[in-house]
Length: 216
Image 1: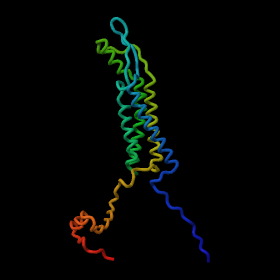
Image 2 (image 1 turned 60 degrees about the vertical axis):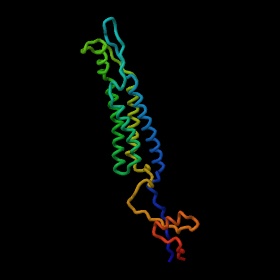
Image 3 (image 1 turned 90 degrees about the vertical axis):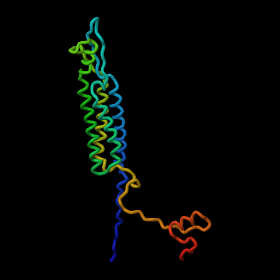
Image 4 (image 1 turned 180 degrees about the vertical axis):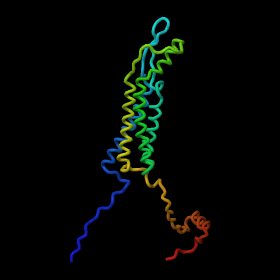
């Protein structure tokens, strides 16, 4: 009787990402970092513009994104931190951080869309310029920068969705920096070298006889 044994391939290591995992990892890093940069940059640019009527004519007003809402900038920082934290945690922790990354991107998109039509910041400036607390901006318009923040939030949202879908295939921190509780074996003490006085003193400190020959 002839027995035929089939070679079973060794299991794939968890730390070795698949090809789809590597591609999704690169795309998530690129989109997350680029999205955070776009969201932060856009909040420093003018989002809305208008005119305020003052004695002697009209005065042009502009409001930056940070004056309209501080949500996109704050969520961009949170999303960037979550993107980095994805690689520091595993399993349930990675899932929670991926959800946080996704929610950060969705929050930026929502806040930027709402901020594009918000003229409260211009009304505050009109009240200061005219000296009348009830004054409002006479005309209102918005720039393209709120939609740049929307695009940045969408990129962060994409990174979060990729982390939710492929995060279990991404590598984590190196195992050499993690401790599993297993005691490490102690290295055997080397015999003292009579040619090196410091080795003899170390042997005496350990309670050993440096002049005793090694057992065969």
